[in-house]
Length: 484
Ligand SMILES: Nc1ncnc2c1ncn2[C@@H]1O[C@H](COP(=O)(O)OP(=O)(O)OP(=O)(O)O)[C@@H](O)[C@H]1O
Ligand SMILES: [Mg+2]
Image (tube, rainbow, N blue to C red):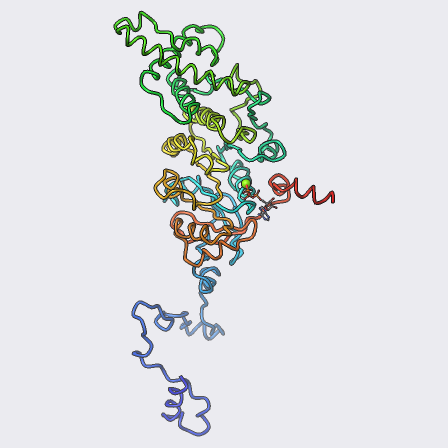
């Protein structure tokens, strides 16, 4: 530039000794300016409009009519192109603050899905991050409590994590005026009657038959029933319902004696061998269900406990006290899912957020099948699933779990301290390469947020005081520290 200026100094009036010092810089020749044809350079842009009206100028309005930058975020993008996305707008609920621009970030998967044009193609959400990075605090507030304030919204939680002897969502649910439905394997918790019409609502005996089929399969470690067993189960169920017509609601124990009984009229055309095979198939189902009843006495035998209220805006299935292995967790989840689908079919017009805490535990186990079928139905029935999990690296690349993750459109990645976990998130969710490093160092309550095809944003989740009170999970440790 100084070269050009020097050249200029020798020309025209600027060559005069007094004026030389004030010579303007010379224009750079065009061929030197254009380094890359696709590059946007400022001197090609029109620039700020100058006022040309003589009348205005006469009144002193000489200054250019300033246009101003559309957003401050836009200017800040220059600092770090990867992490500043366009502001989210104000629809939905506030889910935190953009760390760089300090503007609030609002999002709600259901609102985004229902807006025109659609902002996300799926209402499902993934929340991922290391132990203690702030995932549950975020889900409790931004996915459960705050959206409940919106019109026709409710939430169902499968609460797997134990906190002081009960599920970690218990406080949240009580704060809202409901009582969690607590399950235990020792008979001290809630009892659910598989035959309760409330559970298979809207689908009648067919729905009950499907539920018993799933329960039997789960009771055998995810081994499907063969067609003989399915027929025997169906027949036993119809017989049980017929026997209790006009009387009390049948319970699972009423079905058991009918399993293995082959009605001579209904199966009159069968050969004695076929009848015997059906009899044996019925017995094999009976032994499985018997085993389940025996192991989880108090959970599945008898009438549904009277305190079970499945009609509120907030329902928590507290499965934190059930053993991790064995069929208890998947069985309760199957019943919960069945109840939920029944209720959604009969009460249209509501959007339901379903939270799967310790999500991978569930996506990976025998419940995966249920969640998958629930996924297919979710859009039609207004379900928005929230899967909370620790990391993605142990999900096999070709598993159904990956499909669930890839389909989700609202992504919240909390700290992933191990570089390979952070890398996995960056690749799977299509973040900018440098975001991987940011993920490794996120503080508690900070996350990378991405929805639809928008670029990701670094967000700080901010809780009000009472939200902090109901969401903190380290009370036990904090109390211990206080006693010292
Ligand atoms: N928004 C926040 N701001 C500051 N601190 C937070 C925030 N959210 C959570 N924390 C802190 O992190 C702790 C753990 O939070 P939380 O239980 O939500 O983590 P988590 O990721 O669900 O853990 P886990 O993997 O064990 O389930 C909280 O008790 C709180 O101290
Ligand atoms: Mg948690």
